[in-house]
Image (tube, rainbow, N blue to C red; front, top):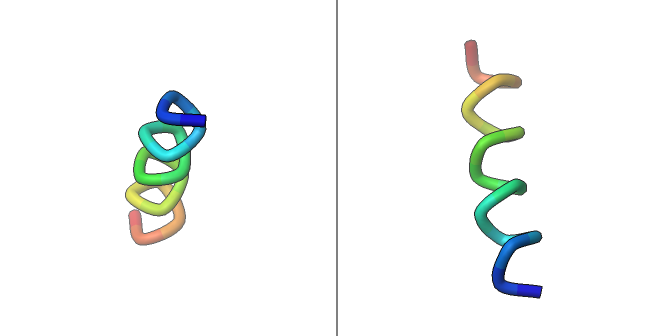
Length: 17
């Protein structure tokens, strides 16, 4: 679950890009 949160943040950064 903790790893998913990190992945989610990475995905959000990519979407922002």
